[in-house]
Picture 1 (cartoon, helix red, strand yellow):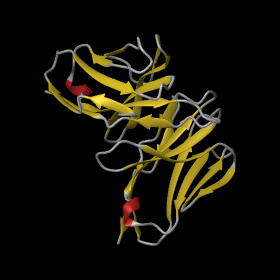
Picture 2 (spheres, chains in turn cyan, purple):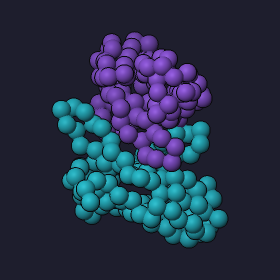
Picture 3 (tube, helix red, strand yellow):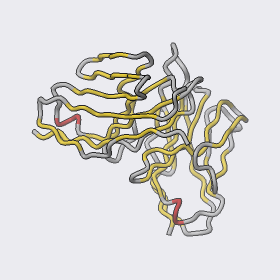
Picture 4 (tube, helix red, strand yellow):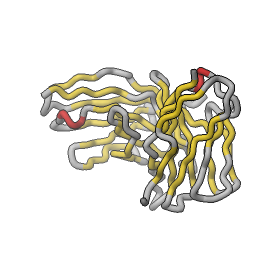
Amino acid sequence: DAGITQSPRYKITETGRQVTLMCHQTWSHSYMFWYRQDLGHGLRLIYYSAAADITDKGEVPDGYVVSRSKTENFPLTLESATRSQTSVYFCASSESKAGVDEQFFGPGTRLTVL
Amino acid sequence: QKEVEQNSGPLSVPEGAIASLNCTYSDRGSQSFFWYRQYSGKSPELIMFIYSNGDKEDGRFTAQLNKASQYVSLLIRDSQPSDSATYLCAVSGTGGFKTIFGAGTRLFVKA
């Protein structure tokens, strides 16, 4: 299907475990982003990528690792999950068209760390 | 720290009224301004963007930008119950891709 997908949609894990959240887009957009959304904080940027093999930190990168070996995929790994990483995670992609850099969001992954 | 501030609400308006949502930002170098709508349990979707000072209208929606005051607003005319959602203000600088989002304003439109 065309668009941007995330998997899993829901995940429960335990403190200390490694977790990988997947993101896949079919538009060949150059830019991809990972956000977390918590009550009272809105969307906070974790990492973003301008192209394959180019990634950079956002506002809250600690405890997270990303990679982008292919344009269409942008996985986010929590190396050792903590309770404070319980959140809803959104992946997004973007490509500037006539100066409009709209971001398209995936459906989100609700992660609970026990 | 670049910031985008919004009143968290909730803002409650009767059906048919005008809803006014406001946003301020701290980075004077900001170039692009967006309003995203997010229904409960769903992902954000873009409804308006504005780059220049003044007003921009699209159907029932009007975005207003005042760069001198570092202020962006969204007006929703003839509000409908289906407009009930959280509205996220987003701001980005030169290059546009590193976007800062506000915490959002919850809007309730009462039938």
